Amino acid sequence: MKQKFNIITSTCVPLPLENVDTDQIIPARFLKATTREGFGDNLFRDWRYRADGTPNPDFVLNDPTYGGQILVAGKNFGSGSSREHAAWAIADYGFRVVVSSFFADIHKNNELNNFVLPVVVSEPFLKELFDSIYADPKTEVVVDLPAQTITNRATGKSEPFEINAYKKHCLMNGLDDIDFLVESRDKIEAWEKKQ
Image 1: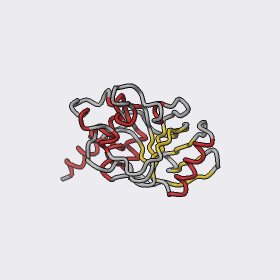
Image 2: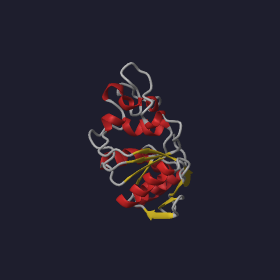
Image 3: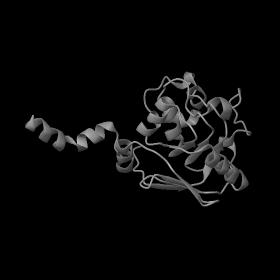
Image 4: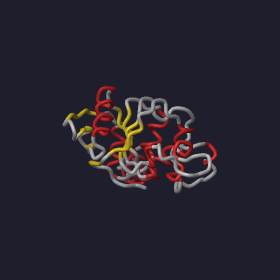
C-alpha cells in the first residue's frame, strides 16, 4: 500500500461523469470491513455489475480497451459522505492517480492518506485529456510529482498542479502520518529537551 511516488507514466481509464459521490465509488453496503483490502473488487459496484452480479459490459472498468494506473474523472469527484472506504477502493483497485477538475476536500485528503494522488486540472485540459483517450486508448499521461506537472503525451500539453508540501513529502517517501512522526522522533525529542 505504501509505495513511494515519483513519476507515473500510464494509460488512463476515462470516467467522464460529473458529481461522482462516495456512495457511487463504494456503496454503503460494503462498508462493514475494517481493513483496506478487497475494496477494489467493489469499486463502482452498482455501475460495474448488473443486479444479477454479472459484469456490465457497458461500464469502462469492464472494457478491456482501457486500463492503467490513472483514473480520469469528471468534475466534482468524491462528493457526498466522508467515507475513507472510497479512497481504499480506488487504491485497492490499483489506481495511483485520479485526475479531475474538482475534488471534494475530504475525499481529496482521503486519497492522499491512501497514497493516491488527486490531480486538479483545468476544464479545458480535462476535456482535451478525455478527447485524447477516446481517440487513442493507448494515450499515456505523465504525472510528475517532484515537478508537480501533468502531461498529455498525445498533445504534449502540460499543466502544473498544487499539492500540500507535507503530503508531497509523505507520498515521495512512502510515509503515512505515523511513519512521518516516527521518522521525526529525533527532532521531536531534541525540541522537547530544549523546552
